[in-house]
Length: 315
Ligand SMILES: [Zn+2]
Image (cartoon, rainbow, N blue to C red; front, side):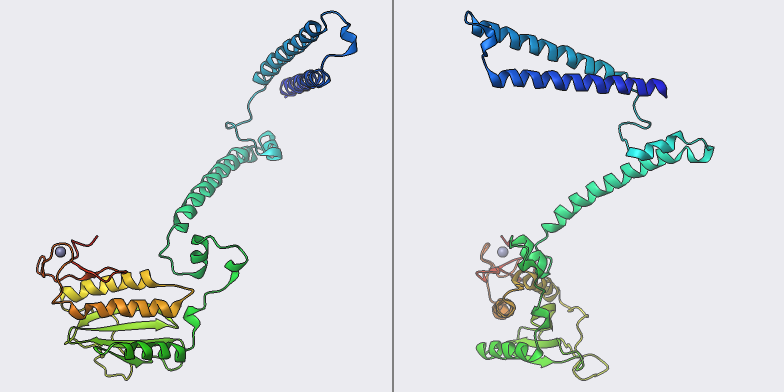
């Protein structure tokens, strides 16, 4: 114990003399050539003085290195947890192990912290996350506006109905029926869309936000068996592979068009995209020019240009 303290004392002394000669060196450097250097060869004398000071610094540096190497390392590697190191000097047997356990858990938490930071970085890049905050983070807006809460799921049902009616009027071959599955819930709405004689889709809204889409063939039903009024079957998949594929793509489109700031535009864009399936069985693929590939029509529509592609031909 005493040996350790003596070594520590020596090292501290060495550090303080090193600091003092570095201080002297910079003092002399800042003052430049002074009157005590005389008249003759004053520059040479000044440079000699600086050389002496540098030599003194290097000898002190060596001393610091020597004394530091003689100080014993704290228990269990390089980590020193401040005053808790005294736990290692406990006299009672069962408490002696505490410090090494503490160091172990410290390392573990440190690692956990590091890994969670990396994970957070990865998750922050996830642009598909549909919350207003992540939208603002990804578009780099300032912290003050970040406190705004998402509101598009909170829009009154009447304004959602207005938007849907407008879209319904816009397309002659696309009919929409509005259902309110839970009359007490004023933010939940389902619409059933019939597109020509091609397909039927059911779209579930929370406020102005589309939260679920299911597409089936025109001759498949969405009404539930128990005949409950206003209840649509959101879960059963289509019998046909084509419409199961379109359901998948529709969910991708719903995420693609989602916009927390312009929710009605998102709904309009999605409906325009869905409407492009009116020629599902007559369109040829933009890439290969064929109607069918692996017995499937072009089930992919480009989000921007609405061009038709086969699943394997899409860009
Ligand atoms: Zn193709």
